[in-house]
Length: 298
Image (tube, rainbow, N blue to C red):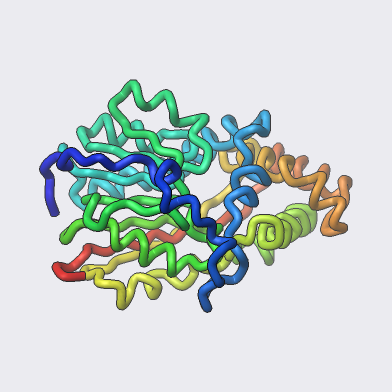
């Protein structure tokens, strides 16, 4: 793994190059693709940055996930000068922390509204579509994505692309949730609304809500060695950051979910009452993390 600064190049954001003008819709879908990629489904839909509560929602998510992410980077040997790609930077907390650790950080998203301010901290901010736009092979020493790859038509195709962008010895880290713990909750309103949200997410965004359960198998056969993984259940208590994150996430989809007949406004109200009650305890998502080191010649 190289710890030296990246050489100067004439690279520009792929969205500005002629090659990026060919959309996924113009190409035949590969066999592993479950649906035709359209970035607007993600960028302008459930998780649109134009939604008034989206910045707060992302900040709450960061509050419950960031300490795990930071610990994994440190355990894998992040150090000053590593070239790091943060895919789907969201609210920017991970990219900000990486820059503070002395890494050379590139952060990407389909909408960089919440990331642009990081340019003042030496972070390269790019509007970039990880599924259709490229980086030169071997560009990075670390690549990290969190809650991103499950939303793509073929997660393993995306994984292949990420591995290609790693330098030999470089490390890929993915953190993705699986939804199975919420399906059998003993709390009826919470269970109903969570199942409805899951169904809506699968249809409206195209999310594969259980792909992460297969970790670390997707990392095998891709030129990665020393593959590892861990898994945990996110616990939720009424009124905590996890519960508040879910309230905002659910509310951003409530109108569509009700219109689809998946749940009622009354069931949402009952679920929100649970999520605001400190006596409420349950499981949230299962979070799987997998990592691997690119082998020479891989």
